[in-house]
Length: 295
Picture (cartoon, rainbow, N blue to C red):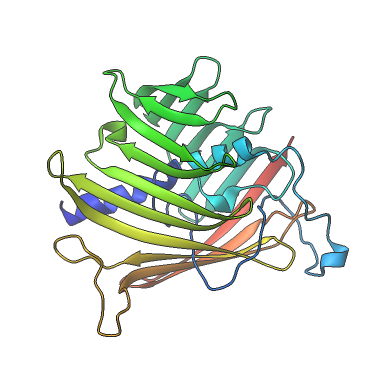
């Protein structure tokens, strides 16, 4: 695969959380310590646990609601406890808007012109750019978790897997949006809170062979109040045959590291500002502002 094509794949990966990558939706990450819960909203809260609102998630954040966020977007966008109606994430070069229905599920989004609409009544997923949109048939379970999707030729383009507690733990996109790439991500939890996401992408060579073109991991870090504090996303270097390069210290070599720090928590314990710094073969700093409307 050409380098430019690989970069395009990276750019489009995390628009569905089933789509796997970093620095795309808005942020990503991995670091050393973690705790346990979820995040979202718009003003500053003290870091003293006794002066903050309750850190227990409300009943509105059911596992199916969490799964909906993780299928379509990234764990950084999860609300801390209060259901979200809309969130708007902006930087100097990016504009992302996500809307949610009354149940708290992702209803539609516009991510820098890439749009999707999820119709839970007709079980349809409409996805693409403004003038080139495709429609997919969704298979839901009783809780409106997306089990899979098919295109108009009845080919399976998305599959989800869940653990015994009902958490979404793996998503696979195969030739989604007419892409000759297979995307797979795996989600690892500490209780109900995401602590690690693994992203991989492959180009199929034949029915039995897949050539790896992307390998990433995102570590999600929480503070003592269980608010999202940091994400660190590592993109690993691959050999010409698609294997992760191991250096002479028996360590995986990293091509890029993106570290995002979250701050300015609002009255609902949700972050409203973030700074994401990328280091390695590329370097850049992105400032994010997150505006949230609640139900």
